[in-house]
Image 1 (cartoon, rainbow, N blue to C red):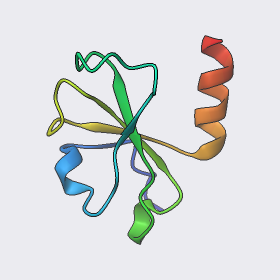
Image 2 (cartoon, rainbow, N blue to C red):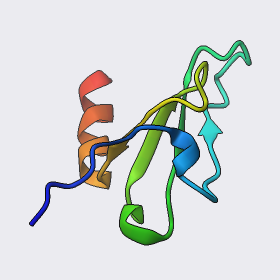
Image 3 (cartoon, one colour):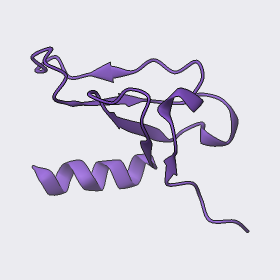
Image 4 (cartoon, rainbow, N blue to C red):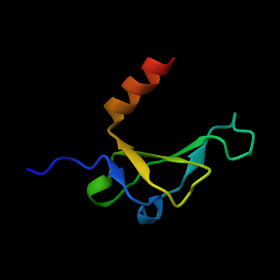
Length: 74
């Protein structure tokens, strides 16, 4: 069984996703954006990218791993 994807080389490869950023963002493009792919092998994962580089790579997290990350940074 192949290892699960952890990144995609370009967030543009995530077709049809809606990227969201926090309402606390200042609009200066200095935050992260998240999206939830709903189809294909990435369905159910959370994608995270740097808002300053919207065509750059995206990290992929399972819901559980993302919850662990958010808990750790709080």
